[in-house]
Amino acid sequence: ERFEKIVADYCGAKYAVAVSSATAGLHIACLAAGLSRGDILWTSPNTFVASANCGLYCGASVDFVDIDPHTYNLSVDELERKLAEAEKQGSLPKVVVPVHFAGQSCEMEKIAALSKGYGFKIIEDAAHAIGGRYQGQPVGSCQFSDMAVFSFHPVKIITTGEGGMVLTNNENLYENLIRLRTHGITRKMELMKEESHGPWYYQQLELGFNYRMTDIQAALGASQMQRLDEFVERRRFLAERYHQLLQGLPLMLPWQHPDAESSWHLYVIRLKLDKISKTHRQVFEELRQAQIGVNLHYIPVHTQPYYQNFGFKVGNFLEAEKYYQEAISIPLYYGLLEEDPKRIVATLKEIFFDKC
Image (cartoon, rainbow, N blue to C red; front, side, top):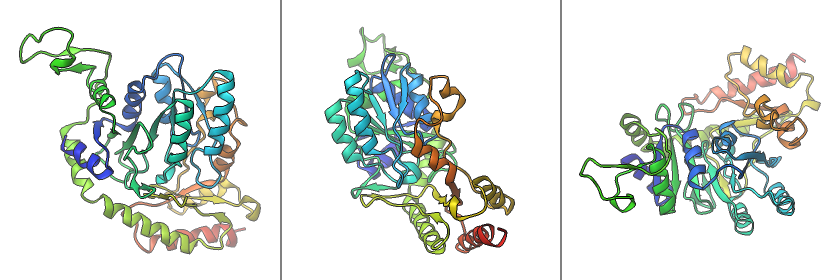
């Protein structure tokens, strides 16, 4: 409860529910929102599979909204177009999960306005974004959403070893989340279906899960929160260093929306493949060979074999697919030394020019 209060207070949300992982948080957030068989969840294809899987866990079907070519977040223009089409077809989503990719918030005010018109719930996948801000407010305030979910996985901005948290300003959602993470059980007299048998008594009111965070993890999280601003400030410093060093290279730098202040979970470059003689894979592999820990976030979810079983195929979401063919995440973490970006960029230059 102490860790939950610290995070809720930091974000300006009324309630927070600590869970065993962000995936668990997304799952019970969907259930608390009433998502079930026959319903539809929409999310971004440029995300980890959990953002979509949480809908399938509830028996719902899943669809995707293509990304903005500048922020790599879910495109609000595409969302608006797709909602208008879905309304005509009677296939509107019950839940939309905007993913704050790399730590930068989606355009939540616009998404919230669309939710009022089309009646869907909003669950922010803020796994990358603790410490970020939107319109001056901390990500996780739920000002423009029903719930927001953080991740405390080992590679995230703060960690509890593994874990997550769901935030909300809605008391009913909070009570549902509390029960769902603990087997559907309550000890609250006012919710019980019959009189209590004694001080030991509890009742299971619904099918819930064992999604609790351990006390040890919560203690670590509370300690980490004391340094969150320091961690984010360091990432912003390193991101600015990359901005300066990468100028003039045949690639696109991350773009920040004026309303958003990223927490810089990732620093993603996009190769201008028509300006270099190497392929995307060659650049990636040569960076790895140089002992630079690059990665690729993400393989578009709709191209995964499991999702192709539902009829999705390459060509469905062109912006996400083009992004995937050009993107590389270069190292960005608190312990990165000040001279490391210089070495990484020098290696990139060597790959782009000297070895062509």
